[in-house]
Length: 308
Image (cartoon, rainbow, N blue to C red; front, side, top):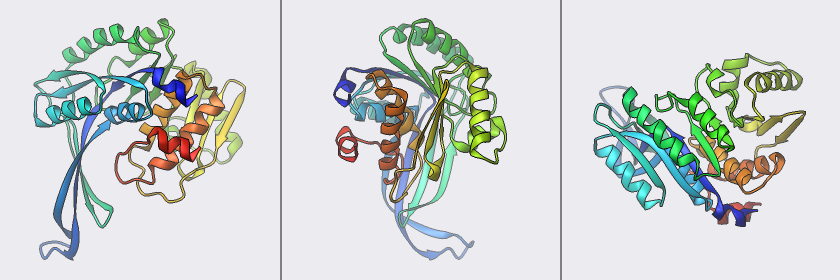
């Protein structure tokens, strides 16, 4: 099935960001305040947000296109260059009124000490133009991922789901916030445990979790609901069936971007012909690999084959 992945054509739409890393040594506490002093020794720039989802899918061998919005700035140009280097077909709409989202992480002794975010919401006009571009690109895709980071890049997500489903394309959504009515009609949504709790409330037993998840799945008209549960692994709720996978990681190094790996792997496996049980098994193995790496990272097909 992994051999078929190279024929999969994937479209990713959502909020992109540039992940900047400053790596340094920590040897003393500042005399000005009780904080560590980091002597920066090297810097790295990586694709973040929906761009990291696209990067993960490409790393597995899928032909990947990306639609998003960036600012007319240095970070936007860096994102464009990184996407080109990663062989991702990017349709980036440039909005001169916004700053490209940047997440700056300061790392000392292999630990994240601080994160600084730079962001402004995109304008309505640019998003409307993206919707027309989306309609054209859906026809050339096997599967669609809508990666919602709550930054305004998916204002028209309900319409995007309608267009993709009308074209008979599976739609996977990584949700944000507590207003999930806009995701109605998607094939599957992939919240983490805390995101699900925001929407359905707390649960005190596995039975209660199953009941609440299946009720939500039915209300939204989803084929499935995949809940990533950190150290408890992940559980998929489909019509009349539940599939659980225990957590894979032997040593968790960094969970940032793990959800991107899960949804990218799930999408390419479904498009390659896997059933739900097999698709989440592989996605779970991929997540186990990526949390053993520092920062937003990807899993290669070779790593996945070896782990499987």
